[in-house]
Image (cartoon, rainbow, N blue to C red; front, top):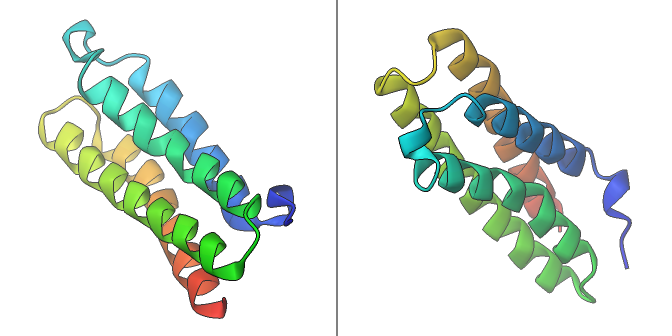
Length: 115
């Protein structure tokens, strides 16, 4: 069994999840059950799928969870574009979070390719 805390990609995923929770805390109340909820779920699925994958027995299973994680990061990336275009977040907030999302996707690609 792998120790998820040793993976830089997990740390980055945890950071993104924290950023998203703070960012969405000021979203309009009418978005609480839609964009707020969707963005939070996509963000915390990044570190949680890495953790679950680390608990699996084989490299193939771990790789599968990393691939699922990459999908969640891509989903979150889209939501960031949407909320920016809707004027819910500003360009600066978008840039900060989106850079981290792109970084986690690159790290995931590298780790998937290593396995």
